[in-house]
Length: 164
Image 1 (cartoon, rainbow, N blue to C red):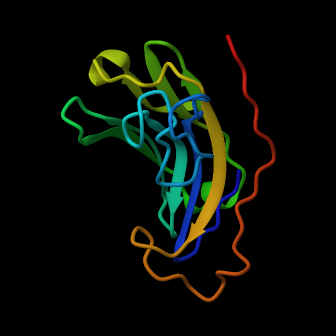
Image 2 (cartoon, rainbow, N blue to C red; image 1 turned 180 degrees about the vertical axis):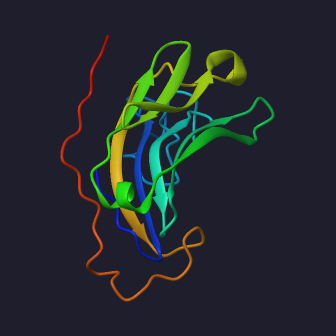
């Protein structure tokens, strides 16, 4: 994957919980909603950020989000610094997801891990999730975008999903 390195870009490879058919009031998933997921709306049913990159930063991020017992949002994540040369080239982002841990890798090297006991008892990551790959332009996280907003692109060579 190659990400745009310019002001106002937020590239992401992330996952949201699959809607649960038959839930009362269930509508197709839209960003910021998701009451149809197994544990209700965001963040209760979780979010997995496989990779996020913002602006011209030299770090990539990987984060879990979930809801706490008292209804608040919690998150745990890590980051990995890459050189400008590495960021301009192709990079492989990997997530290993098991019943008791989630691990992030960048180019085969572990970036971060979250173990199930750290999130208990709210661990919502035993349900099916779906993939999203996108680049956002502008917004509160990135600030203003620069002149090449229309031409910036995130390139994806392949996506592989394995089950064990």
